[in-house]
Length: 220
Image (cartoon, rainbow, N blue to C red; front, side):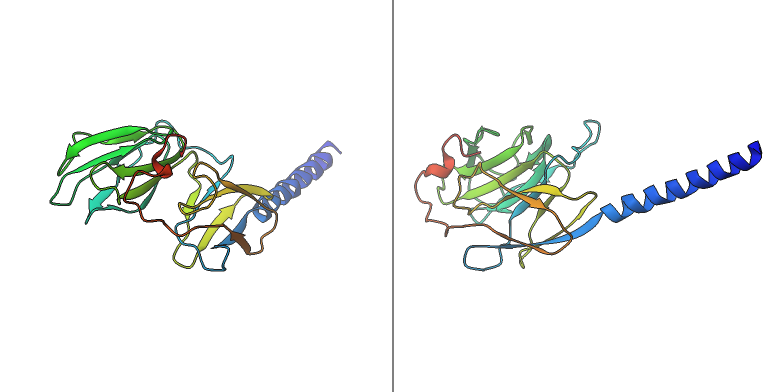
């Protein structure tokens, strides 16, 4: 009798484990986000970050990221890094640059230099860092410092594909040309596995030949 009860318990535990496995599997979802501006144009270069996702381990070594300067432009214009990651700022032009930022997330200066700076810059606070050149005011770049590993950037078709382990889930959406203040992020709740259209109001980039509000403290 005891043996029969033990077999029944083992069988019940087996089916319970299988049920939990498939329940967990079924909760994961592949989601496609389509980013558009207010005119219905696909929006590349939008950054989507999963809220409350796991952060990278302090013991994990992050690769050195690169923000180059080519033809009086930052390259790439938008760089996405992890919190605590280092960024190198080589100057590939044949003229000198003076890179700086007033952003709250990382105020810094790399005074007039050519070639390689002395050392990379560590971006240890999450947020948006707006870059400028004190010599060439038309140079503007952005570094998005993510607090989680689950961060994505939309492609030329405005598309982002992400896998979520549970639903509902919340993500933040940010774009360098958004009409909202640069420190703001749009919060979206994903409730289903359907393709989700996300609209971000943007403005055309204004000519940048003087110091503008993008460089003022608080635009992080």
